[in-house]
Length: 466
Image (spheres, helix red, strand yellow):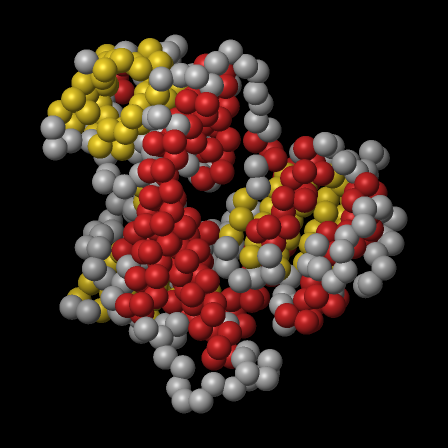
């Protein structure tokens, strides 16, 4: 039986990063993955493939709607080759997952393919084509999450689908109904709207992206309506039925009236649930909470002192980069170091176009906690860079403490917001004030000038270009 200092169950962004950091710190490390490719949901059926389709569909939309204005004339009709688009997406996935294979070899991490299941706190059975047992002094659980569903919806994975199936459709839907106005539903909805689908979004809450700052929800809703999405908030879905190639969705609107939506595909995008199936956690003395998550302390240690858990399978935002940060944290704790994570400073991003990004407290949270704050906001349309690229939707908003001027939250919607949010994270990590950012030189012309202008707006209302 092979013995290890650390075994990692799951090879997503939490698991594979934890394994690499453990190996870097001199531990003999094994990683266990039940699927044939490493990388977990993010690399195989999540972050990476969805971004590939978002980029491909964005190119198509630009060619159809904007090339002529840019002075680019393309003779003949512009057509979508959905098979090639999906094939390119898969090639990106394959390149990325093979990169993880390389990193495992480079760091001398043993890879086991099969379902990892605890025999006890230090022994793990790996059930694959052949069953194997290994011994591990410490174990890191990084088994991730799976798409959630509503109890009355039967997913046939053909017409009533999850994000996994939406990433590999063989045709462009005529009418895609998206149940859920969160990140995944809106991103995939935008992919198919760009390609010509009619898209209807049905959301239970009173606004889309309901966990983010309300001003971002309002602006993105405007953008989506302009793109001719049918947006239906405050709608409680109560039935989803398939008849041949038609899907019928029934919901109650906020007045309690029944509304019916009909389409040829229905994407069920109502969040994700922690995945622990087959783990046999109880055999190792690992406790789960009432939501199926693994219970951990501030060191991400489970009720079994030698076992840790990271990522989607524990409490907190289900974000790939949060999982990676936790993977590094646990590896360094095991090595006797004293790392830290500030969960308030883990950014959230929606990769629609315009992109949406946020870090720190929302305005609603500050109001609820009674914090005395001030706001600085700057529109993207006032930037020369935005006009040059025709990306004029959106804004940057900075929330700062009224007395100390410390930045408490930054919320932005616009081109490249996913990249720009890192400036806000750095500033807040070092507890910068709005004035600090306002006094930093930002290259011209860039989208990031909006951050400086929002900081100026929060500092005695002295934005220069609005």
